[in-house]
Length: 198
Image 1 (tube, helix red, strand yellow):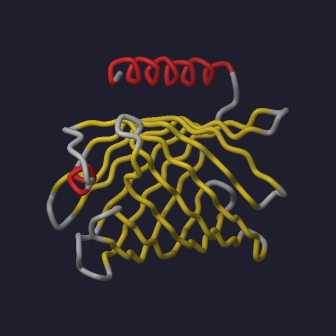
Image 2 (image 1 turned 180 degrees about the vertical axis):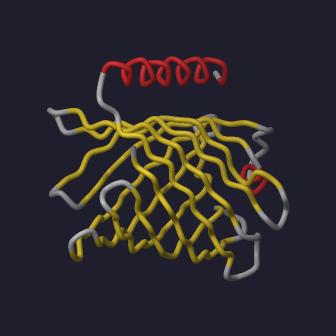
């Protein structure tokens, strides 16, 4: 089953990349620093590189991404993911998305089941993106990840971010995030981010 899911994911990602060559895709590189305010698990340095496009119609948001999170306390990879997401904005401010990705790293050590070094999970995202002023917006989000091999919840993240978009090429953000490792420790972070868009 794991090999089948891996092959399916690889074919999907290759499809994203080949499609990107023939269409106008937006490239984003997001760098984020998460300060562990409880001191439970250590600060996180996060980098997310993504290819993004909007299909018109039906207005679907398509994203291929890779993400790496480094834990400064343990000097280990907290989480490394490679995957794809499909989502849609409803009423211009409500976003609902579903992704599937390969995952590895220290995050898996917190799960209530033995997954080994790698796994496949699916994440549901619900976000409210509220414009406040020109180039200034507030985003509230929640993500819930489920392990597809075991059919169990892995973790849930809730957060809020205030972001300012400079000339549509880079964005600065400040916020808060709560990570709930189901049946294990929770962590609260204060976050700062810098995103480049091409």
